[in-house]
Length: 115
Length: 115
Image 1 (cartoon, rainbow over the protein chains, first blue to last red):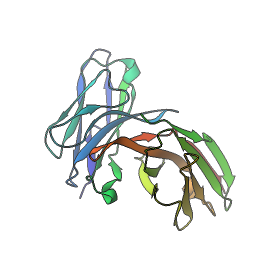
Image 2: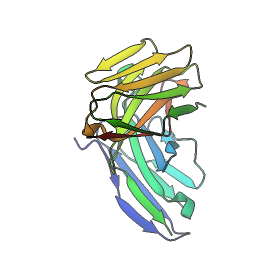
Image 3: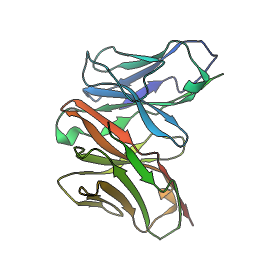
């Protein structure tokens, strides 16, 4: 099993350009999450999908949109990139409602630089 | 929502010493508290977690304690080794229950173990 995978690994954008970050998991998990990580700020939740067909805003959703394409895939879209969106983006997934499935598993991250 | 405070932001110890990282949370309904380790350029990985029905959990050199009354929990690493050097994040679970599950992360502690 590959676990959680993300593409691309690194991307440089110009202000105003758009792009989609891709995330996929092969663990049959119900819930998926997008975080951004900035120096000294920890991991902040952008959007999450509790189950296939549902999405909800997290702590910092402005400037982003998401799509839960199917149970495996959860994409994050920047419609008009801004320098403030320069960050490392992590996708994560989680198994389900049972207590033993509370662990979130993270992907390797996408490093985004907006000039 | 949940607010998680983590201290200290940096911690330097000598190899073999113990390290303690402390976190406080605001939502008394939170019942799950994971700790993640993130090595430089890598993804966060779960190292230990604790649920609110226990006060302490230990896994080899790592232990976590929870004080629900005071709403704080701590990570203890004994006999530290250079490979323990990393950023450590605490987190607290919140949400309305079931699949509506989110984690709020602390801002991280950079642990340096000096040989």
